[in-house]
Amino acid sequence: MKMTIRVKLLLIILLANTALVLAIYVANKLAFEKSFSQYIENTSRVQLQEVIAKVAQTYEQHQSLDWVDKGSDAWEEVVRIYYDLSDEGTPRRRIAPRQPLRRYEQRQNDEPRHRPQRRRAEDQVRSQRERRPPPPRRAVERRLLLKDAHGKLLMGNTKNTKNTFWFPVYKTDHLAEPKQQRMIAFLGVEGSGLIRNEFDTLFAKQQQQQFILIALIALLVTIILAVPFSKYLVKPIVLLRKNAKVLAQGNYDAQVDIHSKDELGLLARDMNRLADTLAQNQSARQQWIADISHELRTPIAVIRAEIEGMIDGVIPTQTEQLMSLNEEIQRLTRLVDDLHQLSLSDKGALTYNMAQHNLYDLLSRTFAKSRHLIDAKHLAFSLQCNEHLEIECDEQRLGQLFDNLLQNTLRYTDSSEQQPGTLDVKVLQQDGVTSICWQDSAPSVPQSQLDKLFDRLYRVEGARSRAAGGSGLGLAICQSIVQAHNGEIKACLSELGGVAIMIELRH
Image (cartoon, rainbow, N blue to C red; front, top):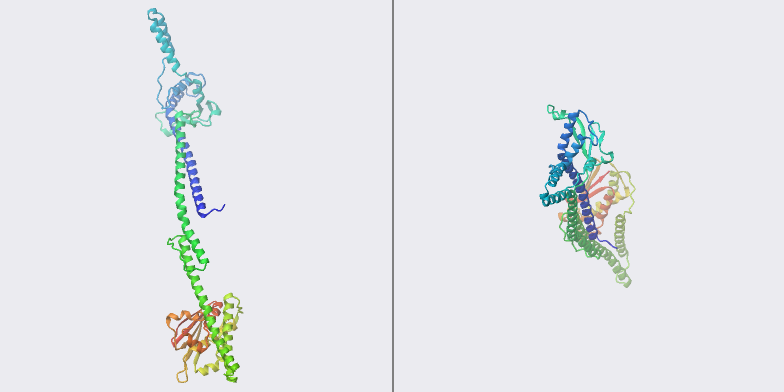
């Protein structure tokens, strides 16, 4: 059987409340028994005040406890006082002794003329005797216990001391303070720790029944409240589940309308952000495919047109035409190589051989390889770097980074013989961070588009960039290389009027 979250929540609430009710019941029962035991003890103490006083008085008369013995007149008097006390601690009405009754019967026998009245009196006396309960002397003697100050049992059975309350008996001394009075014995009542009274038992039973009724009502109320409460808790989860199904079907416009501030609300907001991210990724992927197909279509179309023209004899097969085809093929090759590099970077398959290398030598070799292009562009450049600055890097990948930055500057910087452009490279190393500032002169890029320069196939002006021969992947590759060296790269406006590429390498 499949259990839903709602059923599990309902069961958990019921189990928790049931355990709570049982715990309260056990605690209430223990507290009631303790309180009722204290009540019986206090009641017994009140009832035994006169008996305790009689024991202390008898002790004063004999100056010892030797008088404590079954059948002794002194002990019988103590037992009689205890018996004459009612359950409320008030003395019972004493029944007239038998001797006056006998005198009354003898007097009636001496008066024959009053025989009808005598018979009625005899019947009345007999009825009184039948109604009068016999004195439970032996039962009282069995319930009343006495032991001396050292704990030695003087009266009663040792088997009956388990549930007995013991009350101290002090020697009567009106001059001594209560704390200084000497204890002479302990008086107890057998079974006084138990509920023996019929009304006490009925009261305890009623209390237990009432608590069980309250517990059942509490569980019923819990069930009534738990059903809608569990539905309320599960409702956001149902909405999240439906939204996840919609996302799995490719509809990234679906949003979950949950505004609570708890964990489910946070999960809903995270799922909404996930939907937005998936939508952006889908759009970027579609744009990526469209840009790649567009980039590949242009050189392929040029190559195809020129080859078809040569086949048809429209275009003569000359060295210039072959060189044009070779340039288009090289452009296509660079584009494929850049895409391959990015795909390897995304998969983490690019290998980096880290070692200590001189950064000044790497930059110098980069400018030396492209010296003829720099001169042809009439570009003035300056390099400010410590000749002994070394960093841990991959020499080949870092050289590729500088080559891409230099090609980007040569393509997009306005420079001529009359108005030469400027390239300024500054390197600074401080506190374990190597900072490289690569900035060129005009033209610049709008502030809002600086962050997009590292997007793949992004161009500020697509037509001019393609005319310059760029594919829009150079800075994206630079970003991958910098990140692999535990660094950061960003673009900002240059002081020279162009774009500044800021690189920070941590080591």
